Length: 72
Image (cartoon, one colour):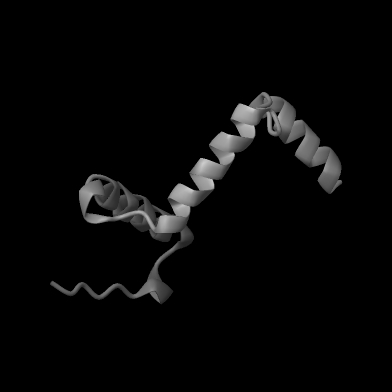
């Protein structure tokens, strides 16, 4: 089934709502969407780094503050 959407006539709010609706629909069908192999590789590497102590988690508020300081 094809649906034509004239994005040029849509407001930003309408486009964002459409994206939200599409994402919600896609996320309920996870079995139909296979993750690419590199996703597993990245997750495995991150697990290795955190397990070995090479990477550590920090509080989200602290991370946002650090990023703001780096970008200003």
